[in-house]
Length: 121
Image 1 (tube, rainbow, N blue to C red):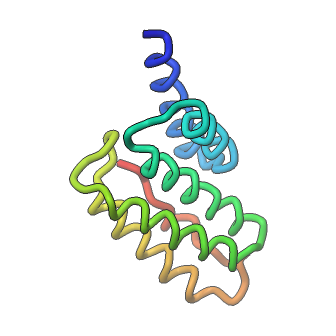
Image 2: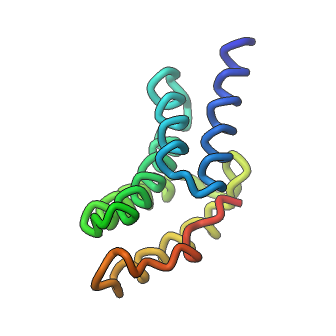
């Protein structure tokens, strides 16, 4: 039971950090969840990690890294459907497409519009 509680706690910590726009800390919590436990939906968790790190990269001015991880996370999320872990996949995939279009329109990573970051709801 303690293991299950820890899994829930790590997932929720990642969500809390993500929603606070602390993408590095979100990625850290989800990576602990992904590496410490063999989960049935580990590809989904890996997608969340990659999504978060995409925003860490864009924040650091690494547009190429941001684009690469955005593409990888979308591939992971496409394996799932409906609502998974409280996240509507159709909405998430549409939001990821908006981020991709925003990335594609950037000349400089510092011009990224943070309002297009997926809400994970």
